[in-house]
Length: 210
Image 1 (tube, rainbow, N blue to C red):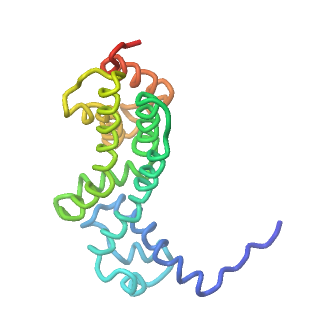
Image 2 (cartoon, one colour; image 1 turned 135 degrees about the horizontal axis):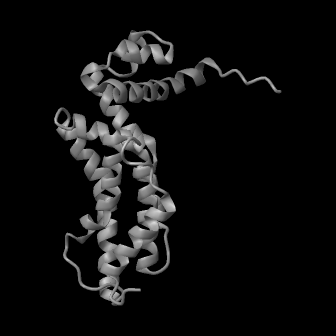
Image 3 (cartoon, one colour; image 1 turned 90 degrees about the vertical axis):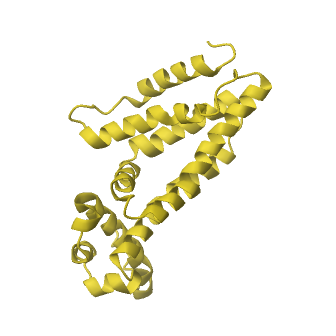
């Protein structure tokens, strides 16, 4: 087995902020903002508390940077949705499938959701920016697809709030898993869930339901 390449001091320094953010995520998830100690984050990384403060001046700034860091997959998701092709139905199903994977199935995103809910009152400006940058564009994309389908006759006329109803099952599943873990809400079978989800959705949305 080949020996692992030893990273240089410069490479290690470049990696340090990400290592701190990863460790901060685990500590904030475990203890919440108030219960998290910067020294515990430092211990996870194997550095001193002072090193953490070199990169992040306060625990508040560290929390904000952590939220932004772990929200990047939503930006990537938006990039994917822009490249989808096919009918409005095909693209809507693709987007919702991607959302389900990113929100309900991804442990990091689920825990990020928990933190946003639990600590939102402490960081209202941060949470508002998070919504405007990452959540609202996805909802807008769903809205535009529904309107496109209505205009083409593929979808029937629906209320303007319909996009909230469209994504609600994904959010409900996510929140239930956060509350009960797998004690009362077994991990859903992805394929079965999406089949039932799309069947209900399309029978309410298509101009000529299946």
